[in-house]
Amino acid sequence: MGSLLRSRRRFLAVAATLLFPGAGGQAQPPPVVPPGEQFSLPAAVPPSGANDGSAPATSRPPIGGARESRLGPGQEAVAGSIPTAQAGTPEYKLLRYQEDWSSLKDPAKRTDFWDPLKYIPLGTRDGYYLTLGGDVREWFESYHNDSFGLGPGNAQGYNTYFLQRYMLYGDLHLGPNVRVFTQTINGFEDGRIGGPRPDIDRNQFDLHQGFLDWRWALGDTDSVTWRLGRQEFEYGTGRLIDVREGPNLRLSFDAARALTKIGDWAVDGWWAKPVRNNPGTFDDDPNPAVSFWGVYGVRPVGDGSKLTVDVYYLGFENKQASFDQRSGYELRHSIGTRIWGRPKPLEYNLEYVYQFGTFGGGRISAWTAANAVRYTLEDLPLKPRPGVRFDVASGNRDAASPNLQTFNPLFPAGAYFNLAGPFGPLNIIDLHPTLDLTLTDKLTLSADWNFFWRESLGDGVYLLSGALLASGLKSGARYIGSSPAATVVWNPARHVTVLTSYVHVFPGPFLKDATPGKPVDFVTTWLTYRF
View 1: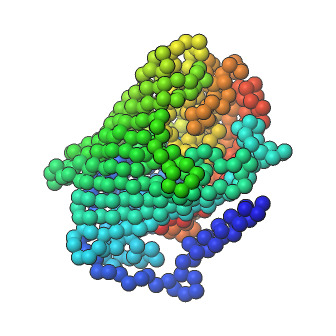
View 2: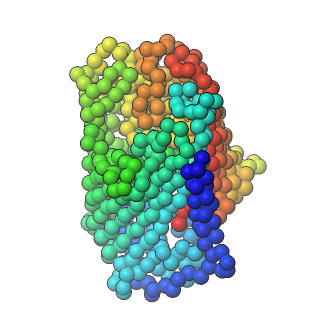
View 3: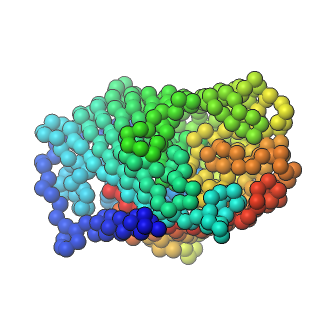
């Protein structure tokens, strides 16, 4: 209890400082050094140039106006972490290295308290400047009957705790072709029964990102940017490659990467190893058991508003893979496409993947089909946006066979179906009607109800991490259960986002057979400050 009270006091102190940086009078920005020549490293971003689904890869997302919510996994987590853009100001991004603050070289455009940190000229040389920024997220979580009674809790099944995350970054531009980006991370957990969860709750202090960019111009608009070092990845809507916003600690990779822009195509190629978030100081390391490589291309058709096509190949090696069938060495190849667009008022996102390779002494043959549509009724009160998602991910057919049909989502969004994350997208069918309402310009409500079935009765049900929740051998039932959820996101100021979400999970016959089968309640409240 003592540590929880100390954490609450620390949270209130941080919140007061950040929410009211000019307390005691009108805040005055520090003196501004005369700016140098404008410079913005061209499109050294993943071809997920529309990672949030808001713009084609070959165009720059509009600055100002409401930010489009992501149509797909992790929608609530992204909305609760990124303040809505203000008209006439640069836009915050899920990946901070995608932000462009070069317009603030003009002192007349610096209207915010933090703007002097966004463009710090380094001498008088053209294109030499530094950007500084950061994120603070503080929140409570409470589970009742976590993992249907399998998770930790008190005698009544409750587990309530406080989480904190602090991230600071520096973005150094050295002329038009060289850039150095660094970002640190601190993550803390207080009061959780069972202690911090490995890799997602606690990290005393470490380098979360640290990479060097070198841009090689191939013409007036074409280029290749070579990126080497520790970095975040985000592609598509995060079904297979996501930064894992949602848990306390995000995911990064130690990687060598080439970001290419040729004509209408944006193509990335990389070789990488995921970084393990260890609890100490400067002890994060690449996972020795896992390697990841691939090529990802994006091309808009026309202006990209009606149709954009992603095509990709992903290679994945795990020397310590484990499924309901058995454990063993996994070498998996994924070939996929994503077809998406926003021909307003309709939005759609369709993604299809086939996987092959080897697992132990057998062959892999797995697949997924993910479909999402949403329609905006702009002229009605509250501007309702009804939508539906329908996803299928294959499961294993025969535990006695050496071959494996379980789909592997690789590095999925950290809040895939909802913020409670009861299941992962392995051996699952889900039908997910949604409704988004705009209560005010700064307040939105999202309500949804997810229904889950096992795709194969020969396989179990998995957690979002890929760990097995319950073996398929324990029940012949197909229906897993359903999960209604409601999430409110409030943007009271440019830098601040407040999120509150409630999730309930009704266990179906499979969970009642294979687990204690207790219904799950989950409540969370976040305060995010981004500058």
